[in-house]
Picture (tube, rainbow, N blue to C red):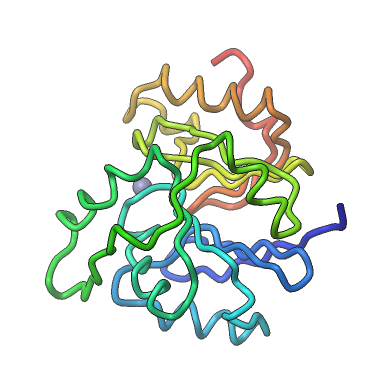
Length: 202
Ligand SMILES: [Zn+2]
């Protein structure tokens, strides 16, 4: 398996990652509602052709991560949805205001797969890795874990903020990622940090 590159095309204090294996690319987290154009502008600045993005995956269906999902689909990029996320999609709209210009996500043309199927799908676009369920921040949260150890965790809670969410669920998700080989954590809003920053005795 050849190498891959990682580029952050985020804006508004939120990271959106393009992981590329040559000209096959995966977008992890999709942008704020009504602001798809800002992500497209960042892609252009980084010389990443939109048409090379094979799929967009949201780590979870909160508006800062998935608010632009339908705009992305309308621009020709298929939405990859984990089966554990399907029910969360329609609920996201409740957290949008008319001024957000949110485009409702259509349910019928998404590619829905299970975590067990994720390795095969990623291999088709040249990426060695898997998508794992990592609940805690939200029940629909998933992480993309590459075999190289890079992991994209969305808002999976950093231990510094444990008090605000269910600590046992969050701890189990971190244990799973560590067990599966996570090394470098790419969170949704904070700087990249090593997995060693997560205490082992959670
Ligand atoms: Zn969130």
